[in-house]
Every structure is written in structure tokens, then in C-alpha cells.
Image (cartoon, rainbow, N blue to C red; front, top):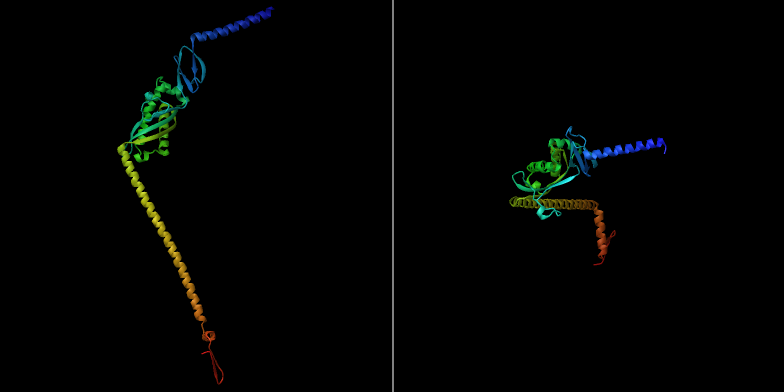
Length: 296
């Protein structure tokens, strides 16, 4: 091997050793963190505080002076309900429905379903605001309470009849209010918010049933009245039509009679008499000095 080649080979080996040593040194002095799909990592640096840039999905090496907290930024679901989902064991289920009071004082039980997600760009800000609390902690201790209080406030604006069942209009209003409040306070966006079920108390339900029955009876009476009025109008139109036809018929007959009466003359009467005499077998013919009678 030539001297030149030996030197080049030596330099190459040295570079590999240097790079490898650097990597080993980083491994020895730092640590690794894996960010899973649907997560971001908030980096807190002891020297610089919370970094603005988050760690994205993948494998990362961090320094000994850094700590990483993972935030789930994928869409999640929160159920505040009294109905146990089919995929949850009876022992693991807890009733978290919302007890609200409707406009006018009617008590009502509400089952709520919320789809939400953390705003990825605001995660470092939220991490600082809540002093390093995890996303799960913020959802459990802050977001849930805000959702409950806001839902109760919305319910208080509507009567029990308007909430049983809930309309799309109310759910849209709830979604907008929750999104505005939670995004401002916690960097959480509301994808959907639906009151999936409302259950009034038995006393309130009796009142609702009575009102529904009274409304149905009123609607039936109004329908019967409308039907009777429609039938009366139909009969009136029919009678008026028949009267108009009779009047026109009478006018036609009167006109015919007038024409006939005007056409009867003395000559016509004499001609008809002659026709009758001829038909019934007798005729009188008068000449200048004699009368001939045939028949009787």
C-alpha cells in the first residue's frame, strides 16, 4: 500500500471514530424520547425555559438539561352521561351526567357528548400557563368543569319543552359558546358538542305530557274547524254554481217564451185551427153562397 493511500485510510478511520464517539457521547450524556402519532412534545429547557418549537412525531435526542411533556393533539371525545357505553364494563362506568335547571324552573338531566382537540400551535403557551400540567390534567380539572358550567348556562335559557328533545339550534349555540370559551382559556378547540339526551323529572314529565295532550287536542279542534269551513265553502260554491246554472236556464226559457209569444199571430192561430180540424176529421169550407161540412 502506498503512503498516500495509508494516510487517506487513516484519516477515514479517524473520522469514523470521531463521529461514532460523538454519538456515543450524546447517548451517554443525553436521552431519547419518542413522540407517537397524534402527539407533540413540549420541551422545557433549564437554561432557556419552554421552547416555542414542539417535537413532532418520531424519535428525538434531548440534552440532560431538557424535559419533554407529551400533549395529545388528535381528536378526543368526552362523555358526560348517565348511559353506560356498550364498550365499558359496569364496574368501570361512572355516571357524569349534568343536572340542569331549565327556564321556568324545570329540573332536567342532560347527557352530553363533546369532540375536542388541543390547538397544536398553542400547546407551549398552555404548558407555561398551567405550569407544566399535562393535557389530561387540564381536561379533567379545568375543561370538564367549564363544559358543565357553560352547558348549564345554555340550558337555563330554554324551557323544558324546548329541551325535550333538544334541537340542532341549541346544539349549535352550545358548540359555539364552548369553542369560544375553551379556546380562549385552554387552547382547546371544540369539533362537536351535542346534547344527546335530556330527561326531565317525573313531575316535570307529567306537565309536559299534559301540555302535549292539550296542544294535540287544540290542533285537532282547529283541524276539524278548518275542515268544516272548507266543506262549507265547498257547499257554498256548489250551491252558487247550481243557482247560476238555474238562473241561466230560466233566462233561456224566458227568452224562448218571449220569442214564441212574439211569433204567435192571428194568421198562425187560424192555421193551427185549420190543422187541428183537418187532423180530427172535420173541415169547414165556405164558398160564395154555400157551406160544405164533412165529418160530424
